[in-house]
Length: 323
Ligand SMILES: NC(=O)c1ccc[n+]([C@@H]2O[C@H](COP(=O)([O-])OP(=O)(O)OC[C@H]3O[C@@H](n4cnc5c(N)ncnc54)[C@H](OP(=O)(O)O)[C@@H]3O)[C@@H](O)[C@H]2O)c1
Image 1: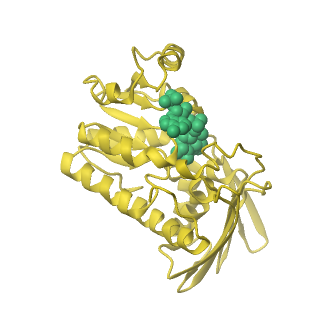
Image 2: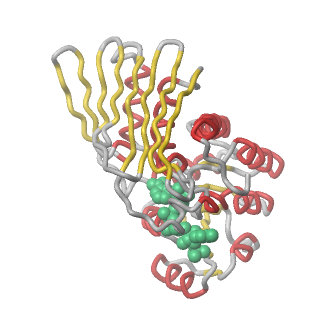
């Protein structure tokens, strides 16, 4: 089976994704859609797609397309993913799948009703380094994990109108990059029993620094995201019997270290492409098997992740104008 892809929204990440898509066997980019025909033409030519659309609607109606990758700002994920699902297209949608749990639930319902595959593009979940770390944690190689420390921060003096800071586009560090530390904590410790969060905000109202403590019955996670300074981007996982450090830049890392007693061992796991190849392969496999969700990053996982983000946003007072 050959999976025929369409890409909707031709910005920065769509370019990186298209390069990786070309590296995955049995996947083909057949169509691209932009609000601008010129952009669609240029992108389509660069990555070898035979259909260039100047409207997203045309992509939904293209019968040659099996699956649509949605790479627009957060505020529009729900609208475009819903339209794609209702046109019986499978969907891989950039993170966050939608901006709150009500929206995510609507997408899950549409995936079920139309019996088409839906997955949030949480590429870190499929990264070989993350997979290896998860395996070691599950094998209790560092005992019982009870402390996770992860951040995602860089300095960017972004335009207030950009998707990073614009509230109309669901800007802010939490939904843009804070979802990664939240993901790590959720994967390793589960759904927290208590959340305490603080933030500093831009004049637009978007969070530009966010820090959250997630409390579990037997553990704590200390998480941070921001646009105001760099951070070391090493994720640290501590257990009763040792520690694991995921190398910089941890969410797309190619290596990690395990420390048990006075022994520190480094592991290297080179990626195929930038690393989007693995989520693409997961879509292919699930669709081949007729599944509407991945077991590794399920609908419920996306719902849980955004529910944690909803609670953080409620505590830091970030509400989008269209909510
Ligand atoms: N997985 C990752 O590592 C990663 C990294 C970066 C970003 N992302 C995610 O990918 C998504 C896109 O991020 P990006 O950095 O690629 O953004 P970007 O460069 O701004 O591109 C977004 C694209 O969305 C389309 N769009 C539709 N409505 C828009 C609107 N009202 N304003 C602006 N653009 C609009 C535009 O495409 P057309 O003009 O072609 O229609 C635009 O080029 C976000 O959800 C982000 O969280 C993921």
